[in-house]
Length: 294
Image (cartoon, rainbow, N blue to C red; front, side):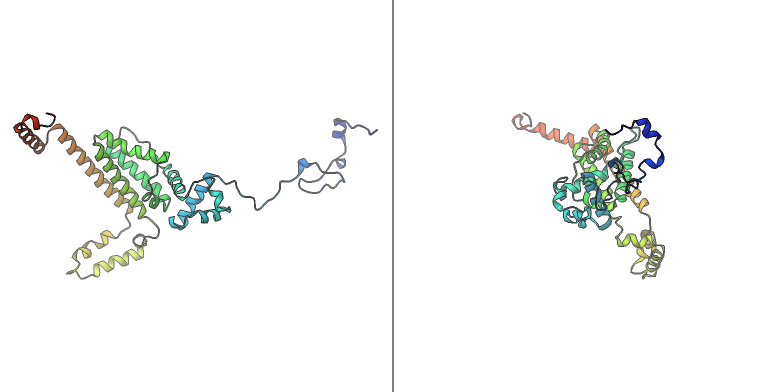
């Protein structure tokens, strides 16, 4: 019968009687090493688990690096190291993938606005935030021009833009038009920020910009008087100023339209009052049976 060794006896055993193998190394005392000390398998080919979040993140990287046209299910699968069919377990098709990319980007837009701000200022704040987010993700604004995303963050942004217009008193149709104008202007401006835009490259490079201004000043003043005088004030590196100036004019126009609409509704507009009075006179001259509602 083998002699039993207590836990206490094991603890008192000399150091050379314990297994001295380093985890992951062969035992050196002739004993079998416990599986508990096995080193993890170093699998260089092991890849992170494929998830929808990973698919969308990689698609966004493709768009930023090579443009929207480079994003295909086959090329994306190759980048992820999977077969194309594996992607369809996470996204239905390329269109859904684009919508997911858009919604993920629009999630970065802070839609919380100080309610004490005037409705015009609320719109400006949201437009500036949207532009900054889109320009942080080159290529995404181009997708937004072709897709109409209805994801949760896309809807939250639309609600944030429509709410001030609704509260300002715009009629339903006019509010819809104003919303489209704001989005089209902001998205269009972001689209023009592409790094490959020739004009942007010119005005951002101080040396080229100087040469361009000299060129305008050298033009025949009898044929191009406006370009000679104003060319150097047009081709300048002032994207932020241009966006702000255009947005201010757009919102000022909306405010004017809203005020005009309010006056019309209150009957303060004399031309509207005159038209209404003439209409009533004409209506009263018609036989009872031909009046509206008669």
